[in-house]
Image 1 (cartoon, rainbow, N blue to C red):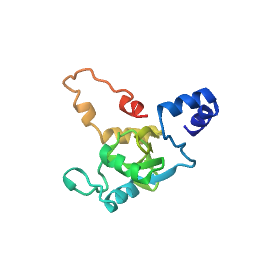
Image 2: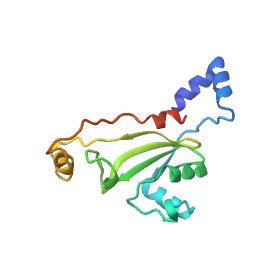
Image 3: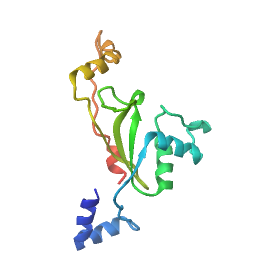
Image 4: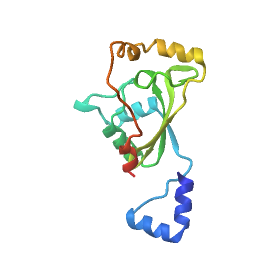
Length: 162
């Protein structure tokens, strides 16, 4: 991301266009700050960024977009938000060694934008994957008597916020 921006701003016509489109743009500085999910929950509570109805965050909660935006805008630097609870992520993702209740997930958060892109590690051993599938028989049970076709795709909301 930074490399692309640096190359874009090195080209005078591209730089002029980018500055015209985004007045006040500040080039992100490397390295990006790394914030663990548990630390993010602590930050939200310490800074009185509550969930709906003023309820404090707790480990295991998904962080809502509004809270995420407030947090990243206060921190005001790009961050990698890492290590999410297993219960709120898909079953086939790799667990963090030594912290089995959490998955190897990362989201890049940018001030003024919030989530830009996410990434994750998938389980690479078949026995571990089969164990994870057994814990999620709900997915197969739902289709036992038929289901409608359905799909998923890259969320455009992340792409259009830049």
